[in-house]
Image: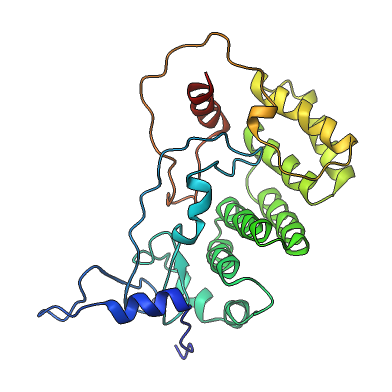
Length: 271
Ligand SMILES: [Zn+2]
């Protein structure tokens, strides 16, 4: 594969800092599952969530501010993934193909967003459409943070298209589709999707979030809102004895678990 080297500045610094061991492998290095190049990659363990997530399940702080650490990226071929040491058998073909190379070279996109889109592209090319939607939504979050509403809207619409291209969605995921449509200002589609979900008699927390989404759509509000604003204060609820950090880096892209898991976490925190 004649892939040109791709080296984001942060990775460059880490690569240079790598120290060679007698056996030839760099200490703490990861061998790229696509091209075999070794590079230093930052370890990342997500801190436990403290603030309520957004309606699209973007985690609250302190996890929210750690997006630069969610994905590793190979400094040689540009392959990006939660663990670049692992790659789908079809990943190498996707990474060497022109669309992926063009994406990496798209300087009008923020560098960190390109990393999430690169992962999304590999997921899409290897058939993991819902995970690709997740990674594309995460690129939109990067655009949110960098005040690029044009890109954020475009990538939210792409995420919705990927979700809809995959297997049928459960009610929790459909809520996130509605939120992505609302934040992309696709008002008619957001309202129609919300109403269809409401008619399906979803579980109560989903119905409450959908109720808020419909009010926001009717008010033409495309802003960020958290689950805390959708749900009533927790008066009495069962004690939850275990709490796990979000499953960043799961095989399903950066899956955050179901909405209910999120709700339980928030209730525990907020209660
Ligand atoms: Zn590589």
